[in-house]
Image (cartoon, rainbow, N blue to C red):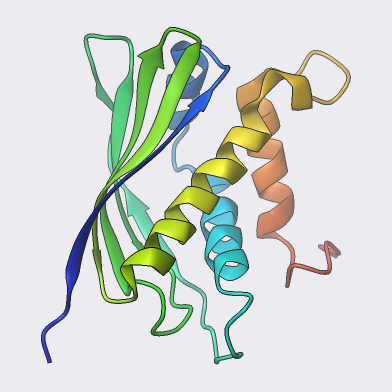
Length: 168
C-alpha cells in the first residue's frame, strides 16, 4: 500500500506584528505548541467514531529568519488520531508580514488521511493559535500576546481531556 502525499498551504491573517509572532516562535522548546496541535487534531475529528487515540508527537527545528521580518520553523507532526487524518505532517510554521499585521501559515506535506480532513486540521490549528495571540483576547494586565499564547496552550496541555481542565 502506497501512502498518499498531499501538499498544504494553510494560512490565516492575524492583527499582530510579525515581531511578536517571531518572538513566540523563538521560545524553545515550544511546549505551548503541543496543546494547540492536540486540540486541533481532536476537534477536527470529533465527528468521527471513537478510536483508541494515543498521544501524538511533534518535533520542531530552529527558527529560520526571513529578510522580510518574518520567520519559519520546521515541524514534523504525527497526531495519532486515526486513519482519517494524516499519519504525519512535514513542513514549516511560517510567519509573514502583511499590511494589517501578519500571516501565519502551515506549509508542507501530509501523508495519509483525507485531503479535506487534513486541511481542516491545519486550518483549525491556525485558528487556535490566532485566537490565543489576538490583542483583543488578552487578559487584563500587562501580558504580551506571546505570553498569553504560552499561558493558554499550557493550560490545555495539562488537561487529561477536552472537558476537564483539572491539572492536579
